Length: 217
Image (cartoon, rainbow, N blue to C red):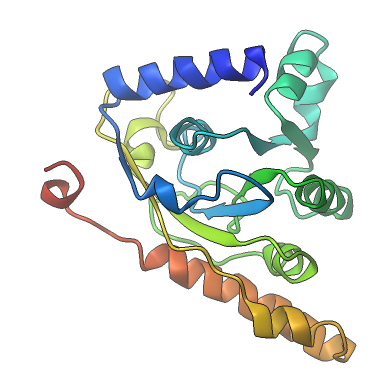
């Protein structure tokens, strides 16, 4: 971790421990080296930092391209490994940058749903995540956050001190689909992207929901 990244990582860990009373489950499933895709539900602006703070390695994040226009913010975003993407992260340039980070051996957090949920429920995935999975050999770790919607969902102007948690699933490799995309038709290729996108949302859904007694024993 760079000094700036480590400072932010430490600060967010303290914030989530004290203000949000977080719990982290199965983070050892995240490889400590090499490329990895952390595919998570998107309930709140808290999702990227809670996932990144839980993982003991540098992680790249998606950030709206418009944020990079501010001269004060731009250097900080770069130090925090932010990847500039359009609003939902599904544009061609954003996907290319994501693939570049993975090909360089980095880990990256992606949100298959694209935008934050309006009611805490899981949404359908965009097909872009299927393309990313198919075009790389990186393991895919499903991730689910809990409590971030209640703490700082669309309905709140400021974060509330609410219990939060993040749970990591087992790495997925999708070897058969990745092999098939090398020689399939265009129509089948689109179908595979959709299948991969739908499956990763199913895997995220299988990580919960949990009740308070299970999340915070």
